[in-house]
Amino acid sequence: MKVSQLPPGRLLRVAPEDSLAQVAREMRRHDSDSVAVMTDESLVGIITERDLVRAIADGINPQEATAAQVMTRDPATVTPDEDVSVVALKMMSRGVRHLPVVDEEGRPIGLVSARNLVAVLDRASS
Image (cartoon, rainbow, N blue to C red; front, side, top):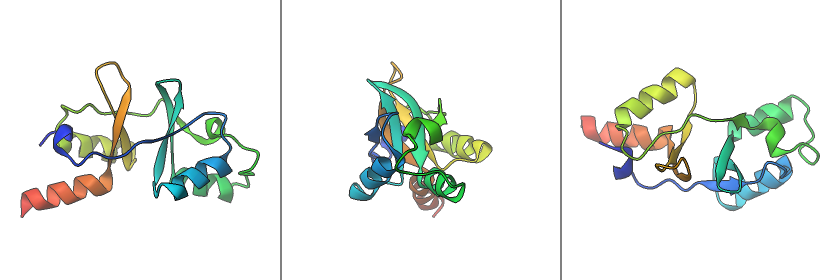
């Protein structure tokens, strides 16, 4: 099965200069566990719930810190034509649970989460 055959994962976007508090509010409002950090149409990073927890635990003030300070820069990505088993291996080898899906020009068009992959791979093995 290819990534393009998965239910489309919504990719919420924030700007590098947005405060972590703003990022958290956006994630809550949209019930999202990750956000793409974008400059214009370019993906420059990703922030997950795990990143927010780490930042707060490290004493970073979410009102003052920006997305750029906490984001994972230049995150790994996948394309719609990649096989989901390869994507699962990519996630495991990198220790991540979210990967942005990008088009031929490298523009983000969606998101694949480990939760999506587990559901699909579980159905395939049944």
